Image (cartoon, rainbow, N blue to C red):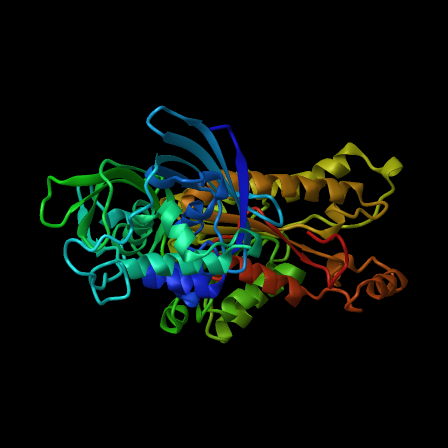
Length: 559
């Protein structure tokens, strides 16, 4: 026999899938339940991998005038999912034939539109000069059930951790003349008109019983082990004796190997006479992946319990530079949500005491604490005082800043740079080094650093301010990575121009121009910044770290 290739084109339809389920008993949820499949990795019901493989029996490359053929061995590897509606092409190439009329062939199934290979495999075919005898009536009569499987198999729902080596399942099956006719109808409906043939010619040339028995491997994978969460990866089988129609056989699968890390199982498959376990007709192997069940979304009750409030009640918050402006508003908003607030100040003692008094009169718990954040000793004393009062510190907001008074760069001295860096960067450094050990002990904590949009879009005459804030950005990102394993989140809030006494030197003309440039047509207010800080500090942001929230009203940059 010369080497030949022959392509068989066919299309998978919903009706073919339903009839294949009737034939094999493989009603796995992945093939039948759209709601289940929609939550799987495939997002839709998947066609049985063995359904395209049975079209090998219609490959004209295997047909030899005056001879019939049967499948002595077959293997397949399933590369991509197939869906109803897919147009496919099966290419088969006979590579050699020996003196005993045994031919070996390689085959591949591709999507017709893209040429994507979905299945590859090999098969061994035996030729005979006698017509195929697929209608032997000897033995027990055919079952009245529609499926080849004797009885209904209840679909298993096994996760990888529920499967163990040597787990075993079996089911009986019988292939009748009627089943062979159903197989022909499935093939005939899917195949192109050019390749169609009549049942009589097909059944004389091809004995499909071994191939039909192999199609039940899909039933074992989808209904027995692993069951509902299975994805068929590959199989190989050798038929040592020809199976006969109208006889009852037992298909048995046993887990030979399980990989927890790969979520896969390898199973040994055997087919033997139902009344004689030693009368083995076929043996092979199956590999299947055990997919994770669909992720279960939290219930309303769970959401109410974990997310109805911000989780800030009785949390201890230290806000630096909090005697005025943004820091003052942040402190008050934390108090509104039940947090215990330490209001840090450097020179604004009266302002800090007034803020604490306002919070206390509203039922809050707060204290004013003096410290120059650029002085490590003073920061250490401040943290000790807060711990004596409240026991710990859960949230740190680094808001302290020196000033934003504009100075042309040519007129700027290094001392100007150093003073800003000392307050913004060194101040945050000192506070973080004092507070982080407290958070690490609890394996929890939040740090929010107040940056600025000007770190990304610098205005003129603000080099010292921009440099110090960019130093804070670098510190924030570094700490976020280093302390994430301790469940400590470090983030930034970057507002655009906020009207406070810190920006009182800015002309009304400039503020108005900025407002007109902002899509929301207003400048940021301290409460806008405070709300972003509270969000990042709350239970609503447990998995956000190293990030920057832009409070800009739609003004670029977009991060």
